[in-house]
Image (cartoon, rainbow, N blue to C red; front, side, top):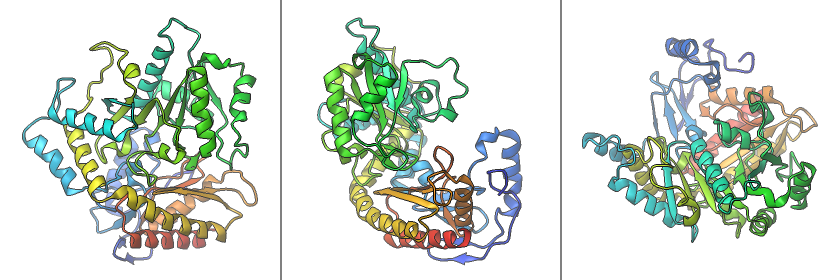
Length: 456
């Protein structure tokens, strides 16, 4: 590891052979270097951030290379494989459409699309009856912004255009989603800034100790934002740099505030939905804070590119035919994969399993954090998503170098997580597939503990 990224120098590591992990070569694998070096040569540097494994196949909660190694996966890709990797029903659903063949339809109807939008509307809270299928989470967020601003102008009030979001938020990589995002270092390229996008402190209780709702209004006043100019408030259900949830009372107060000032409430469920937190929707943890629009992605299909906006009919029906579409909307292969994934989540009761196993995950992580409280600042864990904030000794200042070293030690022991994330790359993010057996979670906790002992 050098310069904040993983080394491509093969290093001998201890052999591992358990039910869920197998490491029998140097890492990275010498024979894989031609692939890795080709990617380094032809792709932008931004693509070099993950542990140097050349994936060959992935099944259930395990990722395999072609050289005899196997990792226990604590990444779910990037919170995608909620139903598990490579599930046969998902593979068969894709293959059946490919053999038919039906590979693309644009906006022309197909039966799978009709079934998926119906099922998604049935999962949503009462009143959120329309579903628009897209390709990526960023695209879904952009669509929510468009719908919210159009809705705010329906009576001709061009002043009602402010989108309020939260500091440290991540909503995607496109222009609108990054304007709504709350990480300043990701917005250096945007000049001039659009003053109608404003951020307020997120009440996580760790990076920001103030969790009373009056901070929301005070921050808007300090930025000169008149409340009746707010078109929508957009928030991740949990901020991915944690996972950081709002206090439920705060979320419910936010819902009431939006009602009072005629603003839409938008929950970005791209990471949180489809059982990840031990409830089908992450915002269910907030009780009565039901949104007007939901942005979905990642776990919606369990594998292939797909996203959605789910919302109230008057809001969703603002645009006439042909004026709110997407080239790959409801691609038949992605839809087939999503339908199979939803079947698995239902039949295997993965939402309930995420809640139950999540309690074991949380207890184990809290035990690890308690061993090194000076550098493992806090643990947040809900269902099958968790994070450990790695900090410089005795402070709350992020320590990305130590976080990366812990991550790399886990990689060498056969436990796979994506690179440390957060405002400064300090969060060890943990997100196993929902079907991960309890014994595999316990094994992963033992590996993480061992890696911390080795590195710290």
